[in-house]
Image (cartoon, rainbow, N blue to C red):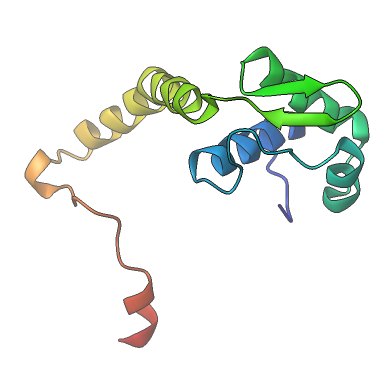
Amino acid sequence: MDQWEDNQPIYRQLRSTVVHRILHGSLAEGEAVPSVRQVAADQRVNPITVSKAYQLLVDEGLLEKRRGLGMYVCEGARDLALTQERKQFLAQEWPRLLERIHALDLQVADLPHTAPDTASKGSS
């Protein structure tokens, strides 16, 4: 991540990055996550910030500490992350989206069923 957003603490953004990697398979269950020091150096953040993000993921049951070995993605982490992220989306993000859809007087038929094709925009 090259730039941090101001709308939430960096440790939460780091947490979201790890969850994203778990959901998309670039961090597999049973795989070691990069060390606190490595992430801190790569992202130019305080190691305490990375530790806080990792501890949050441990508390959520997505990562586990293995004494003397480091942090690993828990078995079942992808399914658990998917459940947690869906619940968060439906509770926090969807109501705002739905409100915006209603405010714009859009109907279900008006909504695209896939994301816009950004690749074709540059070739037109």
